Image 1 (cartoon, one colour):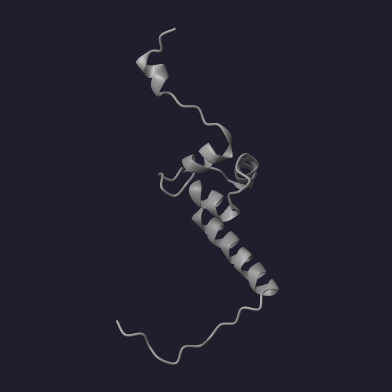
Image 2 (cartoon, rainbow, N blue to C red):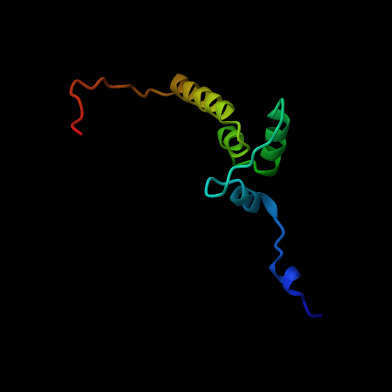
Length: 94
């Protein structure tokens, strides 16, 4: 059976790895017009379980939601870690 030019260049997405490439930051952002994006984000998270909520919100164009998730993750990290911030006494030279 001979494949046509169109069908030989067609590629289906298989699994979370292919979807992660589609929604990676090396690609253009998608922009969705949604009032409540959490439904789409939860669906995408089921398809790509290794992606963080931050990345999914940013990928669909909801950057403020992404920042909020980043802040929540950061605060959760600080609550369970022993990391300390150090005040710098000198200004960095430009």
